[in-house]
Image 1 (tube, rainbow, N blue to C red):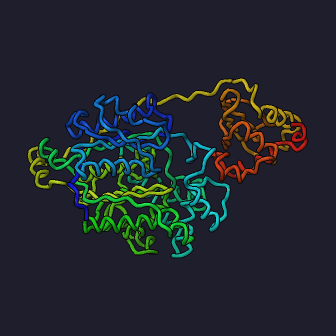
Image 2: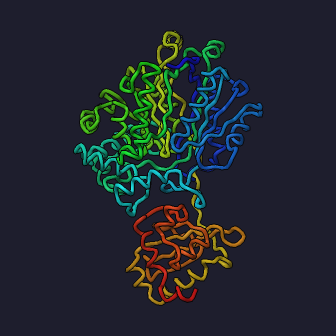
Image 3: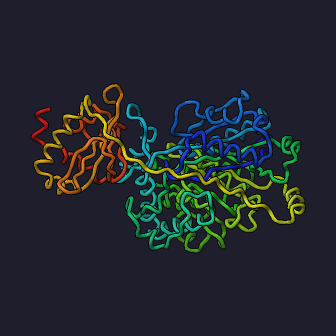
Length: 555
């Protein structure tokens, strides 16, 4: 049992989640400032009253937290920068809560943001070990690595294992995504707000095996923020009417069984989620199944399904029946992801946990508008990151009688949460022509260009795609992109043409040179982080067909 002080969320705020690069003037400090100001306004306090802050993000330089919060005030407070994969936002919340619980502060802020690149997740580092390497090594022992983005394979394989063990159907996974997209139509903060038919979800563009595009969360830009306070602070500022108590909260990381049990389901966090649920019960006497409304980490429909069982919302192997009964949506036992979840609301990594917190605080206060879950008294948040960590948080109204009295004075009806700021959208521009001189790889691509000019049709037959080779660490640190079009007309090879590729391969200049000459094994390069792929993975497997054999001896 936790012996610390009670902790309350007194203010929340978030931005609308956007497709990366879609909104103008939406750099990470802009989005963080917007979310922070909203949360402070919701709490009705000044930034000067915040004593410590934890700021979560995954893609950024050091002290981005300071860059964001200095806009709100230069008050000299401790600012902690947090990175914990996809659970980063709730890890910041976890830290901010502990500071109050342990008596080190009366009021803290948890802020999360992410400015992301489009396409599947990828590492930014190719000169060091990948933190998820252990997970992928076990995965490839169990199932072959195929031409598809790695993360959908990891989670998709958990779903395949569930199908094989328990007879789950691909329709069950599709129903989850269909539900979440439907929920998002009532969320103005959601990246997507379009309803799809079950057939559209089930038979859409395939990403991996049964996982279609509409069953996978998008990358996103966005921010979320929560202001936390002690009971003394709540009473001093007369915030009882809106204070949401964090009833219990715990974090768990991977266990030996994650790797030793040779299970794709356990690789994606089943056991650490179950461990966290056990700790929640030890702290509060409550189980996840006691919650009426749940925000659950649905990075892929497969993860939502296996997490139902890890949390104990249904028995192991019975998630399909749970879904068929409608126990995961309005009218059923629980409403899971009323916000639309990661699949439809979006997934800016550092912001996701705080967006979940924001949604559940609105639900507890009755301010969720059309998404409001009738009679919801207890809420559960599940935020997971591969690598790995999971944070579970349970919420309830801190002072329900004070809330009732406040609502009477307001005419009996709760206000609806504020509407999002709708930023101006960015017009897309193409790249200009750049000088390719000095790159080690330039002679390689000139040989490819010469060969394609001589016999472009054979290239198109062998490759049938447009591949962009993004070259990093060239002369004086320069970067550039060669686009090999082996799809249209007689083909072409251009430098910085701005043409949209089907697949992008990113490597350093020297590593790309070795790869094209056959001196570097592409599979080894991929697993060592030297080769990054986005887009059509199957097309990337054809790169050995691009370099003419006759040219290799010349270089």
